[in-house]
Image (cartoon, rainbow, N blue to C red; front, side, top):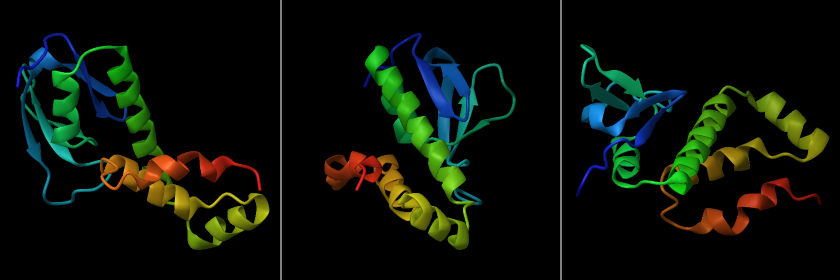
Length: 135
């Protein structure tokens, strides 16, 4: 596998580094969560940077190049941020939102998790936009 030089790698939550400067990844095992998935070691920094993306996701960015991949990485980052925020919405507010406007935050959260897990089942693709269709 060849690492492309000069590729911007999104670490999540507005953190970006050039692929040439990234020297290592270590998955976070303790206190791991949506905003804390991987320690990224960057040349010139004495401490690792905490990334919300997995080492696999960042490595995929480093071996691919082009605007489509970058836009995809930005979209995945947005889904991750949305999921992180949804985790803070309590059950009463979720129920109220669903009753008021028909937006099912539980379903959005579930589909966001599928997307971030790589969508291995492929099921999310069929109904991804059904969340936003009017009844």
